[in-house]
Image (tube, rainbow, N blue to C red; front, side):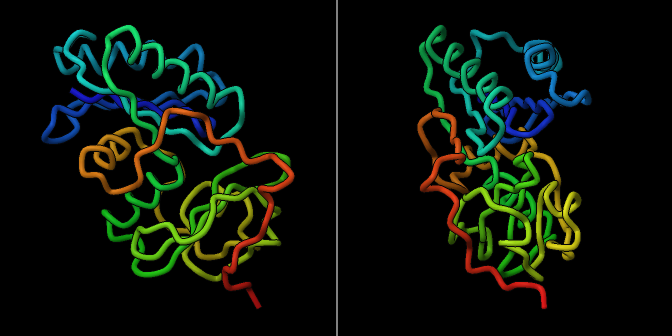
Length: 211
């Protein structure tokens, strides 16, 4: 069984996949309480599926981009579980997971953008075409990457002037993280946190600007 978890946004999301589909999913509703909510959410999905930690065959984790503290909670937990149980740990860009969900639900078609909340009045953003990432992720001011393309993610809700085409999910779903890994719908990465606030990681995207 594949256990997946994501703490790249303000919320915790955990799911369990039995090899066919997601059999249990839980999410925390309190913002910025990753440490307090992650372990109970893992226990909840295992209990709902009648499974134990020893039944796990792999762990998947959203590696961001995201705020340092919350993202670290998920990545460290995934690594510890993998090491303790002797099972592989897969990382996936959290923006890719939202892109996969938006495509699967028919909420986007063709080119679109995923924009997550990076705080400090900035966004984590990447561009996609039919679910394939073309550029990014980068961190930028919303007006620097403003676009009239459809935009998935919380950034579209926070900055509607820059992203008027809000569609799709605003949070990362661990259920779709599991489906992404199981179906190899996005690049599988090492379970290392993806931090973007570095001098060489602020280049803009070639997204169409709002006129």
